[in-house]
Length: 110
Ligand code: 5GP
Ligand code: ZN
View 1 (cartoon, rainbow, N blue to C red):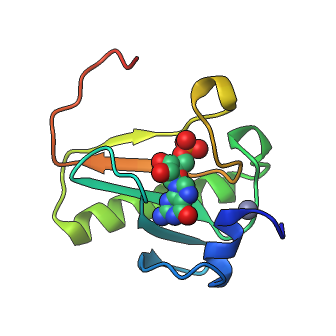
View 2 (cartoon, rainbow, N blue to C red):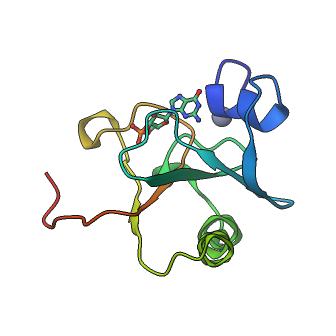
């Protein structure tokens, strides 16, 4: 998708430091971190939201990357968040999983 900022990050059109990359996904630090550690895991292919992921493989590609990245960072406990749709807080319409750590999180979320 040409006007998607996360597709531009995947293609290197917006310079970003990847903290992880494999054939299917990349991860990079959030521009506006909500915790001492806050990175985003995104598929290289464009899917608008969780509602648009059409294969088990795509789910597996995204979620199986997370424990690999946290292990590399030495993180055992973390919060994962996927906002789906504007009312749920989604602002970038290329699916991404927020991974946050390094502080105490409360539950239920607001
Ligand atoms: P959402 O609100 O859609 O769940 O999350 C979008 C996230 O992307 C936000 O936390 C925001 O800070 C982050 N973000 C938006 N634009 C950029 C960008 O250009 N680079 C990076 N690294 N993060 C971004
Ligand atoms: Zn995209």
